[in-house]
Image (cartoon, rainbow, N blue to C red):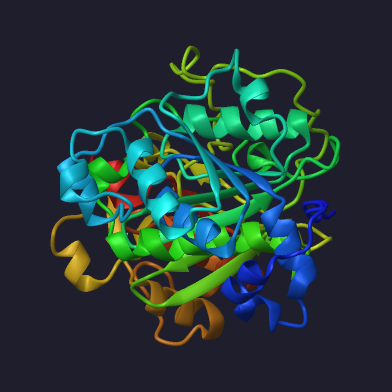
Length: 402
């Protein structure tokens, strides 16, 4: 399952282009064919904020020929901490205005089209048609599903990223004419309104946004040029506090029918009902139980479900944050076992008892959470590899406390 690269531009590189992109041309895997594909590519970037900022700058610097940027927002002072396209002089002005200015200043040969409006269900197919690739840097679930569904219908590759706190995720989706993997295979149903905190509620470190946005640009360059192995069928999870990347496999949901029409989740965003035990769409939850083919799937609970199970004594709720984090408070009914100690106990059984557990097998069925979901997703996956299946609480302490 691979998306086709962008077609090569008919015209050969000019002498000026050969000078400008000389460092690309020196790469034997990339060379003139890769650069020609970038120059001939047409890319849509949804969002000119935190993720969109490095995406737009690096795609423009790389020589992507035509870029369409969608964003209805204006610049707020709080954006300047991470949205590096914008300056103090941009406050109160449309974000796409900053995008055009920055891209044009960096590479005047790039044809950039600004759309100061949201994508809508009745127009999204027309707006994205004709592009070779889409990057989704938005921070709201209705748009994520809207863009993914449109790309599935149009058979366009989609680079997706998400950030919160000190964590980030990214992947590449491609419908492959109804046979591939899309955002709906990672998160089949949207969360309930208010269930997952946003960056404005839970916070985010600006440099994490740069790491994920730049990585998204790299994935786009790989898909467009046809070099390397894009993150198709994999999710990259970044933990800034530990400087670590983890990669988890992702496959198409068995029996999922291909999307054939676009749904406006902003209207149903009372949201689509979430069945018990199948909650998805926190920013940082990933698969945890392995099937025979090595694919992983998760049991993910909402904060309400997790807290109710803990209060009823049905399951143990484990807070895997560090001691300095839990000093600021814990959720009702939770016990504290730091992530490192929990994993060490699970691997070797040493140091027992750990909390109420005297044997690693007793961990099965527990519910774990961290601050925002990144560490618990990784811990859930590592425990699954040891044959210990636990549930992950969506959104972590930040979601449960709110």
